[in-house]
Amino acid sequence: MTYASLAVALSLFLASGASAAEPVVAPEPRSAISQESFFAGLVSEAERLKRETDGFTPALSLLSKHRFKTYAKDIRALSAGDLQGHMTLKARGTDSDLKCILTGVSRDLPIKLSAIEAAKSDADLKTALTNMSELLSDNIDVIVTPATTESGLDCTIEFGPDA
Figure 1 (cartoon, rainbow, N blue to C red):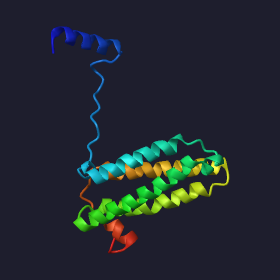
Figure 2 (figure 1 turned 90 degrees about the horizontal axis):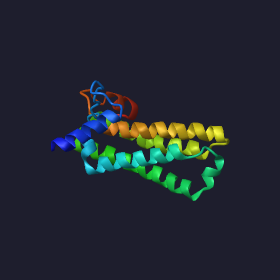
Figure 3 (figure 1 turned 90 degrees about the vertical axis):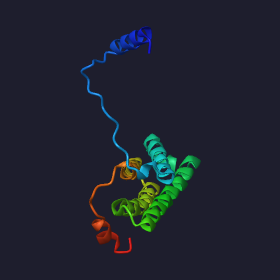
Figure 4 (figure 1 turned 180 degrees about the vertical axis):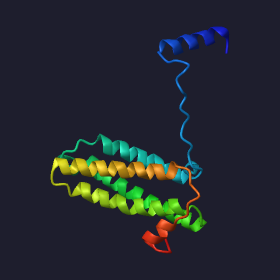
Protein backbone atom coordinates (compact mmCIF):
# COMPACT_ATOMS: atom_id res chain seq x y z
CA MET A 1 0.00 0.00 0.00
CA THR A 2 1.41 3.40 -0.93
CA TYR A 3 1.47 6.35 1.44
CA ALA A 4 -1.14 8.11 -0.71
CA SER A 5 -3.58 5.18 -0.58
CA LEU A 6 -2.94 4.77 3.13
CA ALA A 7 -3.70 8.45 3.68
CA VAL A 8 -6.93 8.17 1.69
CA ALA A 9 -7.98 5.07 3.63
CA LEU A 10 -7.20 6.78 6.94
CA SER A 11 -9.13 9.92 5.99
CA LEU A 12 -12.15 7.83 4.95
CA PHE A 13 -11.95 5.94 8.23
CA LEU A 14 -11.83 9.16 10.25
CA ALA A 15 -14.59 10.76 8.16
CA SER A 16 -16.84 7.81 8.91
CA GLY A 17 -16.85 8.83 12.57
CA ALA A 18 -15.19 5.62 13.67
CA SER A 19 -12.48 5.78 16.25
CA ALA A 20 -9.48 3.61 16.79
CA ALA A 21 -10.79 2.92 20.31
CA GLU A 22 -13.86 1.06 18.99
CA PRO A 23 -13.45 -2.67 19.51
CA VAL A 24 -13.24 -4.88 16.47
CA VAL A 25 -15.82 -7.63 16.67
CA ALA A 26 -14.47 -10.92 15.43
CA PRO A 27 -16.88 -13.13 13.52
CA GLU A 28 -18.37 -16.00 15.48
CA PRO A 29 -16.48 -19.27 14.94
CA ARG A 30 -18.37 -21.72 12.77
CA SER A 31 -18.48 -25.44 13.24
CA ALA A 32 -16.46 -27.66 10.97
CA ILE A 33 -19.61 -29.48 9.91
CA SER A 34 -21.17 -26.24 8.67
CA GLN A 35 -18.33 -26.03 6.14
CA GLU A 36 -19.37 -29.30 4.50
CA SER A 37 -21.34 -28.75 1.31
CA PHE A 38 -24.50 -30.56 2.42
CA PHE A 39 -24.74 -28.83 5.79
CA ALA A 40 -23.76 -25.45 4.31
CA GLY A 41 -26.67 -25.96 1.92
CA LEU A 42 -29.04 -26.54 4.84
CA VAL A 43 -27.82 -23.33 6.45
CA SER A 44 -28.21 -21.35 3.22
CA GLU A 45 -31.73 -22.65 2.66
CA ALA A 46 -32.76 -21.99 6.27
CA GLU A 47 -31.36 -18.45 5.99
CA ARG A 48 -33.28 -17.87 2.76
CA LEU A 49 -36.51 -19.24 4.23
CA LYS A 50 -36.06 -17.14 7.37
CA ARG A 51 -35.71 -13.98 5.25
CA GLU A 52 -38.81 -15.00 3.30
CA THR A 53 -40.74 -15.74 6.51
CA ASP A 54 -39.73 -12.40 8.00
CA GLY A 55 -40.76 -10.64 4.78
CA PHE A 56 -44.30 -11.99 4.71
CA THR A 57 -47.11 -9.62 5.58
CA PRO A 58 -49.23 -11.48 8.15
CA ALA A 59 -52.49 -11.38 6.21
CA LEU A 60 -54.59 -14.50 5.63
CA SER A 61 -54.60 -13.78 1.89
CA LEU A 62 -50.94 -14.89 1.92
CA LEU A 63 -52.03 -18.51 2.33
CA SER A 64 -53.72 -18.65 -1.08
CA LYS A 65 -50.81 -17.16 -3.03
CA HIS A 66 -48.55 -19.21 -5.28
CA ARG A 67 -45.55 -17.74 -3.44
CA PHE A 68 -46.76 -19.32 -0.21
CA LYS A 69 -47.36 -22.70 -1.86
CA THR A 70 -43.74 -22.68 -3.05
CA TYR A 71 -42.61 -21.59 0.42
CA ALA A 72 -44.51 -24.49 2.02
CA LYS A 73 -42.88 -26.94 -0.41
CA ASP A 74 -39.46 -25.49 0.45
CA ILE A 75 -40.11 -25.79 4.22
CA ARG A 76 -41.00 -29.47 3.71
CA ALA A 77 -37.82 -29.95 1.67
CA LEU A 78 -35.74 -28.34 4.43
CA SER A 79 -37.38 -30.67 6.93
CA ALA A 80 -36.41 -33.64 4.77
CA GLY A 81 -32.88 -32.23 4.45
CA ASP A 82 -32.56 -31.90 8.22
CA LEU A 83 -33.65 -35.51 8.60
CA GLN A 84 -31.08 -36.53 5.99
CA GLY A 85 -28.48 -34.60 7.99
CA HIS A 86 -29.52 -36.59 11.05
CA MET A 87 -29.14 -39.86 9.12
CA THR A 88 -25.72 -38.78 7.79
CA LEU A 89 -24.45 -38.02 11.29
CA LYS A 90 -25.99 -41.20 12.65
CA ALA A 91 -24.19 -43.24 9.99
CA ARG A 92 -20.91 -41.54 10.94
CA GLY A 93 -21.52 -42.26 14.61
CA THR A 94 -20.57 -38.68 15.48
CA ASP A 95 -21.99 -35.50 16.95
CA SER A 96 -24.90 -36.83 18.97
CA ASP A 97 -26.21 -33.37 19.90
CA LEU A 98 -26.49 -32.06 16.34
CA LYS A 99 -27.88 -35.38 15.15
CA CYS A 100 -30.57 -35.15 17.82
CA ILE A 101 -31.40 -31.50 17.25
CA LEU A 102 -31.73 -32.02 13.50
CA THR A 103 -34.30 -34.74 14.24
CA GLY A 104 -36.27 -32.33 16.41
CA VAL A 105 -36.09 -29.47 13.91
CA SER A 106 -37.08 -31.83 11.11
CA ARG A 107 -40.17 -32.82 13.08
CA ASP A 108 -40.98 -29.25 14.18
CA LEU A 109 -40.84 -27.59 10.75
CA PRO A 110 -44.01 -29.31 9.45
CA ILE A 111 -45.76 -28.57 12.76
CA LYS A 112 -44.94 -24.86 12.49
CA LEU A 113 -46.00 -24.89 8.84
CA SER A 114 -49.33 -26.49 9.79
CA ALA A 115 -49.86 -23.73 12.36
CA ILE A 116 -49.29 -21.12 9.65
CA GLU A 117 -51.73 -22.89 7.33
CA ALA A 118 -54.33 -23.24 10.11
CA ALA A 119 -54.25 -19.56 11.12
CA LYS A 120 -57.76 -18.12 11.44
CA SER A 121 -56.80 -14.46 11.81
CA ASP A 122 -54.00 -12.12 10.83
CA ALA A 123 -52.89 -12.11 14.48
CA ASP A 124 -52.74 -15.92 14.53
CA LEU A 125 -50.77 -15.85 11.29
CA LYS A 126 -48.33 -13.29 12.70
CA THR A 127 -47.71 -15.51 15.74
CA ALA A 128 -47.27 -18.60 13.57
CA LEU A 129 -44.85 -16.79 11.24
CA THR A 130 -42.84 -15.55 14.23
CA ASN A 131 -42.64 -19.09 15.59
CA MET A 132 -41.45 -20.38 12.21
CA SER A 133 -38.85 -17.62 11.98
CA GLU A 134 -37.50 -18.56 15.42
CA LEU A 135 -37.32 -22.23 14.44
CA LEU A 136 -35.46 -21.36 11.24
CA SER A 137 -32.98 -19.34 13.34
CA ASP A 138 -32.52 -22.39 15.53
CA ASN A 139 -32.01 -24.52 12.41
CA ILE A 140 -29.16 -22.23 11.36
CA ASP A 141 -27.63 -21.85 14.81
CA VAL A 142 -27.42 -25.55 15.62
CA ILE A 143 -25.46 -26.27 12.46
CA VAL A 144 -23.05 -23.33 12.60
CA THR A 145 -22.38 -23.42 16.36
CA PRO A 146 -19.28 -25.45 17.21
CA ALA A 147 -20.01 -28.69 19.07
CA THR A 148 -19.37 -29.00 22.78
CA THR A 149 -18.19 -31.96 24.80
CA GLU A 150 -21.75 -32.73 25.93
CA SER A 151 -23.15 -36.07 24.88
CA GLY A 152 -26.47 -36.62 23.19
CA LEU A 153 -28.16 -37.94 26.32
CA ASP A 154 -31.17 -35.64 25.89
CA CYS A 155 -31.66 -37.09 22.42
CA THR A 156 -31.74 -40.62 23.77
CA ILE A 157 -34.26 -39.59 26.42
CA GLU A 158 -36.49 -37.74 23.93
CA PHE A 159 -36.28 -39.95 20.85
CA GLY A 160 -35.09 -43.33 22.16
CA PRO A 161 -31.82 -45.25 21.90
CA ASP A 162 -32.01 -45.64 18.10
CA ALA A 163 -32.10 -41.87 17.44
